[in-house]
Length: 94
Image 1 (cartoon, one colour):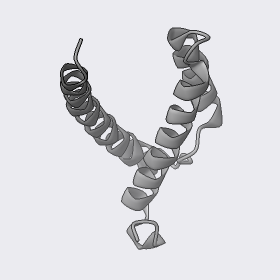
Image 2 (cartoon, rainbow, N blue to C red):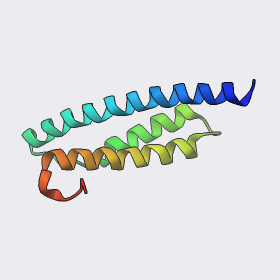
Image 3 (cartoon, helix red, strand yellow):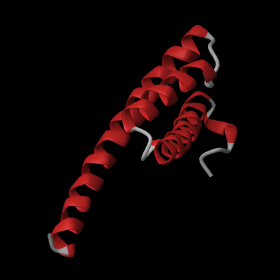
Image 4 (cartoon, rainbow, N blue to C red):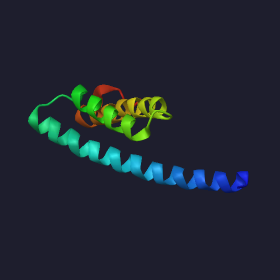
């Protein structure tokens, strides 16, 4: 397969990934509202550990390190998003 064809496939994957990340952030926003109503903390470390274990297993040995790093970064972004929604004056948006 030519490099341009491979790049076109990556471009399509990037579009799909972006859509999925936006969907995830939207759901995280809904969860932030529920956490705020219930007086719960933004960080739920046990939940993050469960997700990491699941996605690393799904990725397999070859890619688990990369997937773990990706999800750790995504967790940080989602926690930041939730904190901004719960505490708009937190300064995190800047």
